[in-house]
Figure 1 (spheres, one colour):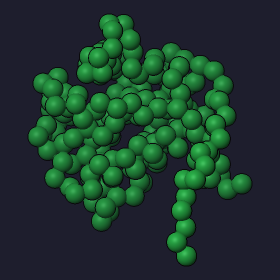
Figure 2 (figure 1 turned 90 degrees about the vertical axis):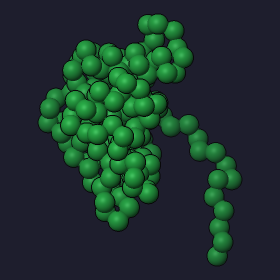
Figure 3 (figure 1 turned 60 degrees about the vertical axis):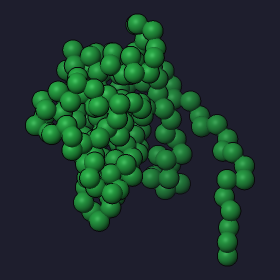
Length: 176
């Protein structure tokens, strides 16, 4: 089977991670793959904010938890120590699609390297808060120009990756 198709079929979301940080070379390779995602008119409207600082990661996790309505102590990042916050230019017409493609490429690249990943929502809502706006300003971006697409959490899986469940039926229609 083609290696790309194999990676697509074997990738699963991981929700339990070892406490180890990713090696820099592995993290850089995943990020680089995400930057090659297709984008409308090759505008490359999406950016990646890499968060490995534990304090900032924990603050972002807590903000995400509060937005999601979970109880104190729940970690919506499931123990992953690396968070790739994907954002995109609000004004660009295909920003949501462009950022979503980056998320997909990041997760596929991670899987191909034996790294677990999961798409965590609520990035948009986070960046609409004062805390989120300060995060964007911290990396030199104007908060009113960017929108959160998602968090790609990364880490070494604590257990074996499960097999994909069977695909649902009647999901393709042909017009020939």
